Image (tube, rainbow, N blue to C red; front, side):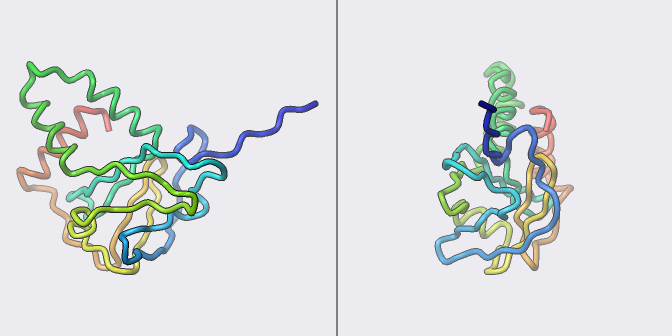
Amino acid sequence: MGVLPQPMSIGSTTSLFTGIHHGKLDEKNRVTIPAAWRFESAVESGFLAMYHPALGAIVVFPPLMVKRISDAAQQVTVSDPDKMNALSLLASNSIQVACDKAGRITLNEHVVKEAQLGRDVVFKGGFTTFQIISKNPPAVDRTSAHTQTILRALGALGL
């Protein structure tokens, strides 16, 4: 008797987020993850969504990347106030989201407003993450002190 292949899971080590897909934001701030990126079996949680001002987009980290972030964050000590502050800034601009049985994640008002999402949204693959972008995205901010702190925090986490 042969071994049956296991269902592909979003964010597994073998799946990549590639291509551009179009979707809709509903009245409850839910977006459906493109079918090509969706898991085929049980509901999986542990996603992280963060508005990234340098991209003008919401970056979604799947469970595998969330684990990397968590592992890196655990290496930061309270004796390093700069890194603690950077982590706090990252965390305050992020939300945990879960994928439901229909393949949807629910975004909060903060990230929807920051990304200026309307009804029509675009999903852009980034291999290990993906972005949710407005059809009319906000201007990117790569120079403000706020954005530079976020970029340093992401760099400190190895992302």
